[in-house]
Image (cartoon, rainbow, N blue to C red; front, side, top):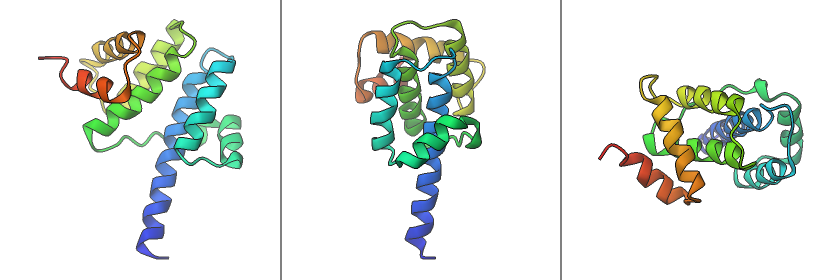
Length: 143
């Protein structure tokens, strides 16, 4: 196995874990809406999730562990994806917020400020910010 194959394998594994985390948020309320399904379809393409992997993850989203990214900016990107999944229905149920908080902790955000981070993330999505604006605002929210 070449070095590039090893990198590709790790990259794929991380993407599957990330996609699996988003699927868990999507099905947290027990239902997968049309909007959530469309978001998952688009995200699967972006994360290079095959049709077979997509179905496998939908059947068992707990199969893949959450692997937090090392870089803060990458954690914010993943938080953005997860937050968008929660917001896609335009209704933030308490269970979805609870799960988003758990995923934010799993992504490496500290327990002392995770509630503030989740609230800020959701407030930014209400404003329909793009990824770059989200990362910038989240990075500079204490200034």
